[in-house]
Length: 82
Image 1 (tube, one colour):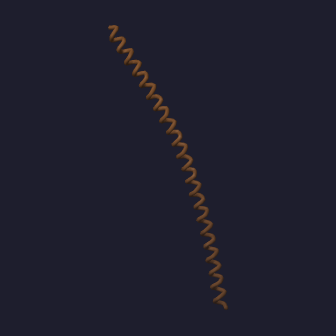
Image 2 (spheres, rainbow, N blue to C red):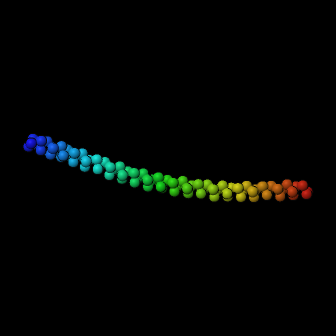
Image 3 (cartoon, one colour):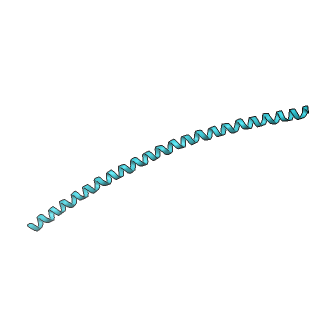
């Protein structure tokens, strides 16, 4: 009986150590997940800002092209009236 008790205590001690190690691994993984989630959030914000910037730039270019077209139309009209 004493031998069984010693064996169970050793097994309990080993399992307690394994449990602590696994808890640390889980904690480390959760920290890594949090870091990755923050990085993802930042990258999504950056991407959204870039898309917004592209949309604004695209609109500016469209307006600029429209202005050039109007200018060309005025030049053609002026040349036709000459």
